[in-house]
Each structure stands twice: as structure tokens, then as C-alpha cells.
Length: 580
Ligand code: HEM
Image 1 (cartoon, rainbow, N blue to C red):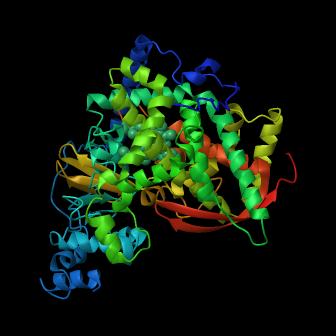
Image 2 (cartoon, helix red, strand yellow):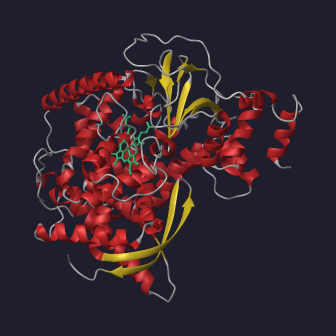
Image 3 (cartoon, rainbow, N blue to C red):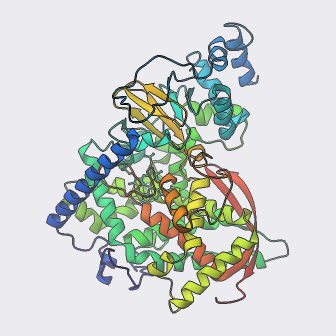
């Protein structure tokens, strides 16, 4: 690959103790020279930590209108509406007489109830639910109206996309802070092939491999790939701050020029973020800016197309419903149409990540499988995540009172000044409000909103009000914003409170922040399914806020929704009046 001008924006930076010690030479060797023996020892250690953590968890766990047509068909099966559905809706959470296993007399047990809700008529009801979810109710009301209808945060429902995309759309929804975490307990739920829910995109979009995110931790390859990714992230830690600051400073400069171009000019943050995030991620993970290679400026558009082919069953684009239903939600798009884009993206990884692939071989992975995984993690997990995360944080800030902007600017500038003008990991650690704002944005608006897990055996799940029996093989589903906005855990849970996580009391709430597919107080290991990039994501989220308020006192923006997240169009920026 040409363009091996390494864009190592990264220079040596201050590192607090406990972080991977990375030398500058690793610019050409993202993993550094890793001794397989050391990796194996680390692997054992991580596995051990994971086991202890699991047993701790176990302890705590104890305590012409398609819609009309379908409605019409359903009505003809019985009375005014679907008999099955109405029957269930009029009998919310019926009490059943099942004695829980191991029910001691130490703690009063919640009543065991039958899970309310029904799946309705095969084929038709899943389509009706899909139309309600996408078009007639919208996802929030879809769940909230059912919580009211059944008087329960746990119920049975069909999740989109349904026929013909998914063979079985029946799930048990868990929508409160207490029942939701069952989805993280891999001793109870299987996470095989369910990243995207009840359907799985063709593996021809991932080189024929089932990549890490689709593997259950019980599959041996999961540990090898996750180990590779955890090591990669640790080995590149010292590059994050300088690389991020360089790329996002440039984004903000472009934004300023766009706003200065004419009166009333606006700047589309999402668009700038796509290009910037793509280059930043290539640079920070592998030391080579994708736009400096043969990919040129085409990287983000090729990546977006590839992502679209996998995620379109979960999207609406605002096109006529009939077109979206037919082309996005009913049949998979033919994957060969994304093949050449994928090939170009793969070319970047096979060259830029060559030394990571050497390490992969030492871990017992083939270069090819590792490369498809690096592509998936960098583009699907990281770039896909950044497309939602950064606009999400900016949206929360745009909607917050300007007083929060002043407080953030004050905190960030004074800490940076005290650190001699440097943005370091240690400095960011001292920014209590900044850290809280990022957690609060992730709590209010988790970038990945749906989580799934298939019961590995018969089990009992517990909400705040009752316990429910789930049978082996049933699919459990969580809509995360409802769990993380649960007012039984968070006061005014539906409101953005910037300093919610400040102070000791605030920190105690962190275990209920779940964006990473795990509790914020826990860490990703080869034995769990928590996001391998958890610490990286938190760091770059904080860096966005830091970089922004080092440059600006306040700003205004128009906020909307787009695909999976928020659209933020900046309308004004007020430059920093002081340096702290
Ligand atoms: C804003 C960015 C990100 C967000 C919002 C995010 C979110 C998530 C979530 C929710 C999951 C769990 C999905 C599920 O199984 O239901 C996940 C898994 C994963 N993420 Fe992230 N992620 C981000 C960035 C990253 C980065 C930078 C990496 C780089 C290493 C990464 C690597 C992974 C991997 C490998 C998994 C699968 C873990 C496993 O199978 O055990 N993610 N991520």
C-alpha cells in the first residue's frame, strides 16, 4: 500500500500509572512486539478476573394502507380487534402459582407472574408490530404504550424486522433497570448470532466469517479475537489524545469557516464527523490515516454503504412506506452489491494493520479471519459507534442550558491551565462535570439501543414488581433507554442532568449506566460481551467535550433525528473569551 506516510499525530504524552507503556517505535507496529507467552499470561489473568467478577455478579443477582389491511385481517378472527392481543391486553400480568427455586426466607420474594402480552397471529401480527414500531407509534411509544397496557415492564412482543427477514420475531422485552442486566449474564443468555437481533446479516458481508460480535463467549474464537482487540486498544492508548485533538481541531476549524461563509450559514456536524471519525480511527488504531492511502476520501462512503447493507432492516429513511417495507424490511439486500466497497476497505486493513495481523497469528488466528474482524470492529463497532456517540453528546449539550456550557468551559480551562496547558489523561480524570456530562449523555441516549440474549436454560427474571419464568431458548430483548431512564433508579430519569454523576452519591449510580453492554463499573474481558473499546469510547467522549469548550464559550444548534441517532446542525459558535 502506498501512502505509508505515517500520520502519527501521536507524540509521547503524560501517562498515569497502570496504562500500557507504548513506545514511539510502535507507530509502524501498532501492537509493539508482543511476546505470546506474555499474552497467554495476560489471557489467564483476564480470565481469572472475569471468573471472580461473574461470581460477584451471581451474588448480587439473587437478592392500501398496509396497517389497515393487517388490522382488518386480524379483526376478522374475532371481535373488534385481535382476540389474542386484546385478551392479553385486558389481563395485565396475571398472577400464576409457581414457586421459585431456592426461595429461602431471608428476603421476601416478589410474586411470580405470568409474562403478559402475546405474539398474536403468526406472520400477520409481526408485520403489524413492525409497522407500529417504525411508522405508527415510533419506538419509544411502541414500548411505553405496552408497559401501560400490561402494567408491566416485562412482556411478550414481536420485534422488527419480522417476516421474511427474521424466522422468529418473538421476544420477551425487559424494560426496567432491574430486569435488563440479565442480558449481560452470559451464564444465563447466549449471545450467538444476535448482535442485530432477530435477524443476522449474511456472512458474505464479513468475508464468510462470523465476527467477534456474533460469537458467544463459549466459542473459543471469541476469546482469541477479543484478546487481540483488547491488546490493540491498550497498546494504542497513548496515541488517543494527540490524534483526537489533531483531527477534531481540524473539524472545528472547518465548522467555523462554514459558519463564517455567509449570514445564516449552518454547519452539519454529522457530515464533518463522518469524515473526521473515519480518519481518526484509522490513525489511532493503526497509525495510518485511511485518506492518505488508495482509499482516498472514499472511505466513509464505502463504510456507510457496507453498514447500510447490514443495518437497513432496522432503519427507516423517510421514503414511501411501501418501498421501505419491500426493500429494507422484508428481504435482505443482495450483498454482492457491497462487495467491491468491502474489498477496498479490506485492502486498507490488510496493509495498515499488518503488525496486528502478525500478533493475531501468534494467538492462533488466521490473518484473514483477524483482518475481517479488525475491519468489522473498526468500521461497525467503532466508526458506527462514533457516528452516533458524538452527535449524541453534542445534542445533549445543545439542548442544555447555556449555564452548563459556562460551567464546563470553566472546569476544563482551569484544569488544563493547572496542568501547564496540556490535555492529559490525568487532567481529564480531574474534570468531574465533564465526565458526568458524558455518562449522562450515554445514559439518556445510549448509542446502541437494542440488546438481545437467548435463555441458555429455564430461568427467572426479576423486575421491580415481580418475577417471571423464562424458558430455555426464548429470546430476551432490552430497549436500553427505558432501563437507563428508569425513575426507580434515577431521579427525574427522563431528564438530562449534567452533574448527575458528580460526587460520591453520583458515582454510586454509575453501575446503572449500561451503554457498553455491561455495567459502567465493570470491564470488558474475553469471558463477557462488554464492548472491547469501553475505556476508549469514554475517553474520546470526554475529549470531544474538552476540545469543544477549550475553543468555545457556548453554541447553538438545530437538533433532529437521523437513522440510529441525532442530527446536529450547528448554527452559531461563540469563541472562548478566556483561557481559564
Ligand atoms: C462509540 C463507540 C462505541 C459504542 C457505542 C460501542 C458499543 C458497543 C456495544 C453496545 C456492544 C455490545 C453489542 C451487543 O452484543 O449487544 C459492543 C461490542 C463490542 N465493541 Fe464496542 N462500541 C464502540 C466502540 C468500540 C471500539 C472503539 C471498539 C474497539 C475495540 C469496540 C469493540 C467492540 C467489540 C469487539 C465488541 C464485541 C465484544 C464481544 O463480542 O465480546 N467498540 N460495543
